[in-house]
Image (cartoon, rainbow, N blue to C red; front, side, top):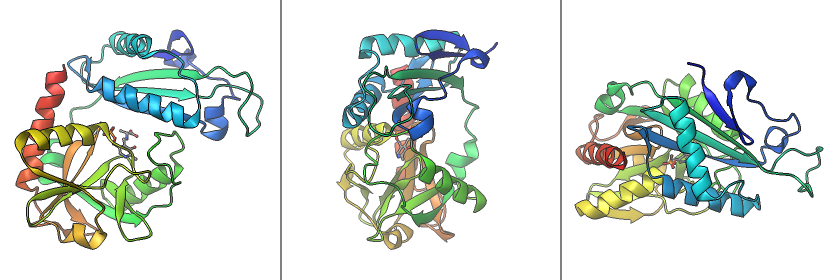
Length: 284
Ligand code: PDD
């Protein structure tokens, strides 16, 4: 079955789906995106993703190409046409196509692209054994709260992780504090059992998975503290983990080669991971 994409108003096979060479996404990375999980053919936490999309668009003054209801119909139609039961849907909105000039064009229509694909079953070893992260300087811009398609620093960081045989790179600000991973949010569990993650300031993306974990923590009565933590604190933490739409929740067992706790997934991370899977399945 050939994959179908939605591009500027049409559903097309990927090989025919294209955007203009002067699209500002291509020329300036002038656009935003979302990645939403699909479980049982349904979108997980769609409302929060669309809220964040609208916020990102608003911050960049890009008009929304469709209202939420119409966009929801397109997302579900792309999932249906691709026969995706478990996977992701990707959507990107750019400021549109116009002759290359940095300032906003007077008359450009935003470009909307939606794709969807099945995901391979996640390697169970990632959850069972945990993963390794490295730390790298955070060289990104100062508005990481916007889900911008300008991801070159994230791309370089993820590649550095791959070359170090690590799953992710945790980015570190000038204070020695971890902001987040290149495509994931970062968490630790302290000796006292508090779950710590950075507050959603302009240095991180306010992850939808992060918010789902907040709900679970509140419901289960664990202690949540939103504050920055340093690399040294993370290495000495009882547990560590990361979250995102594509990674779900993965225990972090090594940071720069240093074992976290006993170098095995921590009990709280595993409980939260199981609860998150239950949450994602219940959305379906
Ligand atoms: N990344 N931080 C960054 C920099 C991210 O790019 C992402 C998501 C997250 C986690 O957000 P969420 O829980 O809403 O997925 C945090 C997506 C999955 C990506 O770029 O593929």
